[in-house]
Length: 279
Image 1: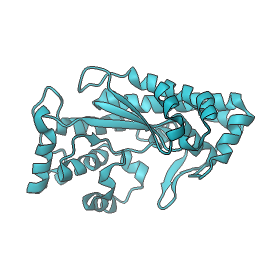
Image 2: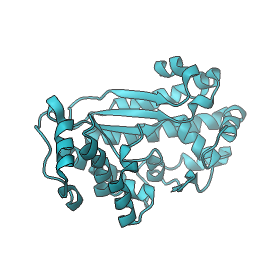
Image 3: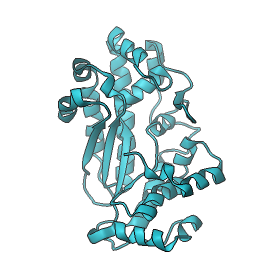
Image 4: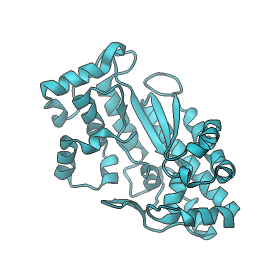
């Protein structure tokens, strides 16, 4: 589910032009929408993956996080102790005074849906930006092809699974073994429960925001659960993934008028696929 737009020359040109770091681009509705639409125009794909990042809901909950080129997500103050967890969970999704806010995500999704249509609409509206208006013939053909027989191109939203978010919060940056996260899981189950409950609510709300703005499907993305033993996943992770999916499943898409299909995806998770399915 990597957004194809990140590798396209038009995306790279846009990033160079605006000069903003990754999470800031995600929180500029016009830029997030444009990045979402670029691979649709170029490749005529069957659906558009909304351009965002699994760290966005953390930023929207007041967590100091940035994407360092060549490194990945870096947390300003890693969450290592019960006191750290207690401070973290006092923050709530959408209450970060330094972020553009939840409405920026909603506006971005709505802008994409306005261009790609809904089941009740035939074809896209006028391009949403000067960049979008300068389409080549190939891009126009790709956009038209992507609509296919259905007459519209669905938008797919996504969010990071609770364990993946918790692993970044505890480790402070990408890790191969997630030792600090697994240590907290076993050493302080109550703090782990509070942390995972918070992560489930934050990411569930983030996915719900995208769905309510018009996404027609969504994915819960677990990058790091494959590092866990099945027993640990079953006991200390799966219930919180289920919580996030339940929260996302309550959202009604403004594009379809109903709840949406949800995908539960993980990398390197062959040992725990049965447990993931149960979640």
